[in-house]
Image (cartoon, rainbow, N blue to C red; front, top):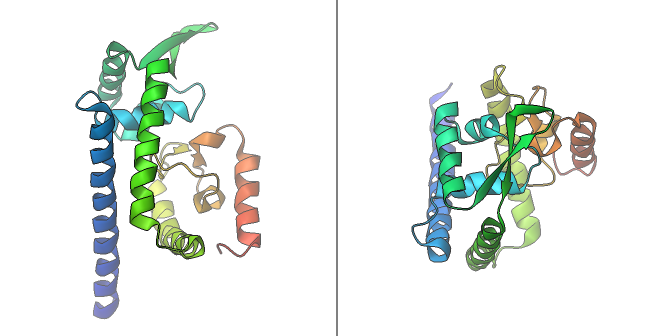
Length: 204
């Protein structure tokens, strides 16, 4: 890679890292406002994952957090002890457990979402929605080849967007076998949505 391009790429990576880190700091501060020291940000991620999926298990939590099954099991156990998660055995196989939120966890997530939305509106309220969409599309174009190169036979479910769940995503139409966790078992819907995204000229 020529030096000018290499330096430009490093600038992009630095800017992306700064943005991501700064946003995480803001979101963690809002979580502390809502829950004090009761829930950590990784635990919030687990609760949010469970809130957006059905039939999620400990192995999915491990993939989502990028940790071992043992660490994920420990994280789930702590949330159960705090009264925020419940385990439900699958009738057809008692060895399999699915996770569900308690009513208390649902209230916590609602409070957090409200606080986070208020902060994000203060931070990005002066930007036009169309401008934000163009920025998102540009970032997706940069992210796609990197995500495809990193897939390398990884887990089938894609958790790239973290807790910032979205209805449409360029990665769903990528050449990898990874599928958005919100559409597991329904690859047709996932790919159809990606095709629509391209036809509208928003990506591609």
